[in-house]
Amino acid sequence: MPLINENNTAVIGHPISQSLSPLIHNYWFETSDIFGHYNSVDVHSSELAGFVEIAKNSGLKGFNITIPHKTNIIPFLDRLAPIARQMGAVNTVKIMDDGSCVGFNTDGIGLVTHLKKSVPDWPKDKPAFILGAGGAARASALGLLNEKIPMVMIANRTRKKAEIIADEIGRGRITVVDWDDRSTAVAAAGLVVNTTSLGMVGQPTLDISLDQAASDTVIYDIVFKPLETALLKAAKERGLRTVDGLGMLVYQAVASFKIWFDRDVEYDDELVSKLLEKLT
Ligand code: ATR
Image (cartoon, rainbow, N blue to C red; front, side, top):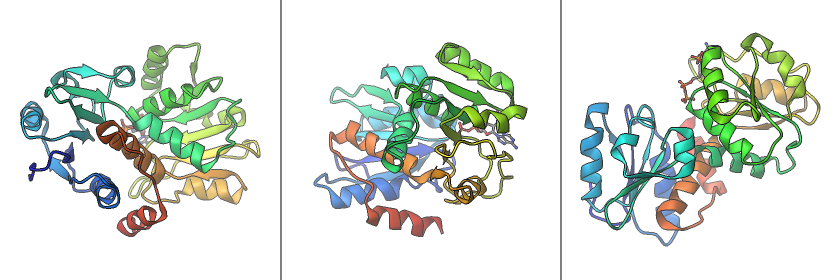
């Protein structure tokens, strides 16, 4: 791994070859005044501690963490930002000048930024309804609650996992809906977010009826392969506003870049077309 430039960054995970993060960050290195390179590094769980030590001593500015290490990385870090502690997961590490590693989580801000940019007048006065209870659901719930929406409803096939998220975030702000009641719960929601893997290439589609959705309800699918999932297609056919999953990926990267370099970068048309090219 070439770690010769002091602005170099990376993403670690296992597997890692599918990651779009190198394309995104290297685009910003090419188009901004920050000179550097972003690598992808396949790191097994057993190699995490070793990677952090090498990273600290190699001049790396920081790194992203993806599946399956977002939680496992925590014991190897020196400090956690409050949002990462709340999420119990880290997707961005900044290596400070003294070599200490600070963990952040930009997934929630990524989801919310893309929502605000895509549908600025999304109905914030109604509850949001999140499907799924993995790391993305937790990030979505915390990100949305920071926007001061009245409540988050959450439904998951394995109800227990949704209960754990609700207990941790606080029952006054989040309520669990039975998976079997998901189509009915849509009626109360201003925003419906699919954070399950359903709808992804090779997975079954998310079976949910949008019949009861209000006309101003926004449907957000964090799946980006395909970019237009069956859920988003069904929502569009009903005239509902939709948000796709690619922007969440890009805006969490925007936030990482800001943490590392204190620079605001953008999701411009050229980056969109580079990503779409890679996805098709
Ligand atoms: P991430 O951390 O990226 O959010 P994850 O932890 O693997 O991913 O979570 C995947 C989500 O998709 C879970 O909510 C999972 O439900 P379970 O907790 O019951 O496993 C959901 N999911 C995956 N396949 C599903 C299916 N066939 N039907 C319903 N939900 C499914």
